[in-house]
Length: 123
Image 1 (cartoon, rainbow, N blue to C red):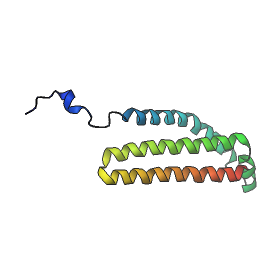
Image 2 (image 1 turned 60 degrees about the horizontal axis):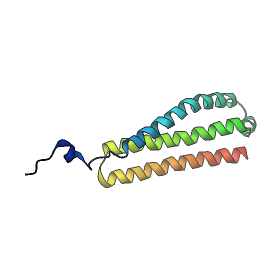
Image 3 (image 1 turned 30 degrees about the vertical axis):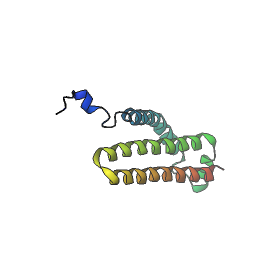
């Protein structure tokens, strides 16, 4: 029988090296969204209710297009970090890896689709 301290038994177990990375990623993207979402709502509200041509002309201007693009990007980064933490907390093994890959692909696909749509409007 080995006599080990609690610290010695806990070494090299768990995710003690990556927890802060997810926490800071979530925190930074949350602060970014706290700034971007009101700006997006303000810029989107100006275009709301307009005709198709008016909305296209509005999003061809740089400020609304940049705000929309930044909001899409930061929101999908925030989603990816958040869903990864939830999946890591509630699933194990191969299912965990599969769900993280699928959700990451979904986040990047939504971001790419939104940015492509925005670029095709703006250009």
